[in-house]
Length: 239
Length: 306
Image (cartoon, rainbow over all chains, first blue to last red; front, side, top):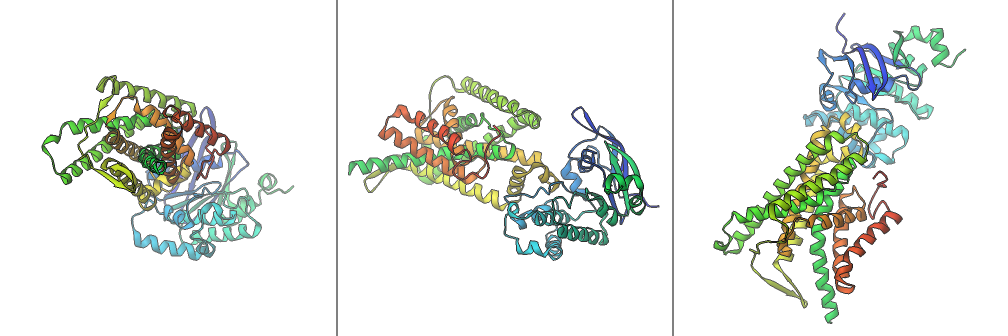
């Protein structure tokens, strides 16, 4: 088996004195969509923030393609190809859609390839093409989510971290977003996906980890977890 | 007719003074925009600008240079050198005093800024003493009369230089890569990092540019008033801060507009009310804005945090 693209080994992260992650280990392999599910406050977002360097782990290591990311600054991590579309979309509200997309490619220098990628992103999200000159803050929630994913793609990710891409979206938009996620993955980008919509996540993912109060309590193929009684009860709302 | 002339005379004074305030206000507003700190040491960097200018002018044998173009070139060199030195001071202050407090409770950097202000004032007091220092008047004493209103080259210089630097700043912030990084960092620091923006260097550049503009203001106010003083930055800084709040703190165009408005208000107050009332009027404006329109004239966000 080849080495994973991204792996965490015994990661422990604190916010001040409060421990948020306990010995979290997980991996994302070439071609995979890996789902990370769990309740509020389980540490899903903290896991992604630790990978992208926004918080530093107190122990453990994060390895991306043979590079240790521990102690590397967030901007340098982006340059390596680890791209994080954060929770709540975090669009730059007073910049236009086009400027937001261009900022996604901030770390890159290849102008011609950036222009091509911009066309690809606009083909993927025709809605954004109509709104290029509009300020990010004036978009609807669904459009902002498209912009957040499009902006992340502009960074040419080698691995993509998506935090709650379906949050607050109407059911139609949720379907569109999940189609796009599957599509991006088919083009060869491995994805680590956090979702509150566990059913959708398990349907699109190949493997899944379940996080509870900062620890991984279960892992396995997504299809198996979809049929796991405890998971069904806790995260899929079934009896 | 004399009344009208007086009015326009004061309008010119106000615009010149406003150019100085606007340049200082830009530094306040840029730093607030990016790290939400009201950098109370900023007014003292402006005074430092006039002190640096004085020292550089002292190195140049001004009396041997008579011709206009050469003097203009000297003015330009002194402006750029003062700007560079003030920019370096700004970067050092951020690096040594503010950076480690970036995630501290808001009051800590605010009090630190007041401390830095006192330190800079004391250094300048030791450097040039306790009294007013004359600023060499090396530009020819040439007066223009337009429609009965008199003004000299210094007024032209002050307005031209301040407007030129403001235009340059606007182009920089909206057209360049670093300017884009600054705007992104100001709007969402975490998201900016996730775009691959190095926020430490972006914040350092913001301090450099804001402080350099204060250095420019230090030079032109020295030229205009012919004197400088180690505590000048205290009041000028507060008035420029008022200008930044009036325009909408965090907003670059607002700082320019606010600077010119405060300058004009001050000139008109001294003409039509009394010299002694200028500070009262200006700071009353500050209080009125904070009460009735905290987002300022052009502000997009309410500065609720300090």
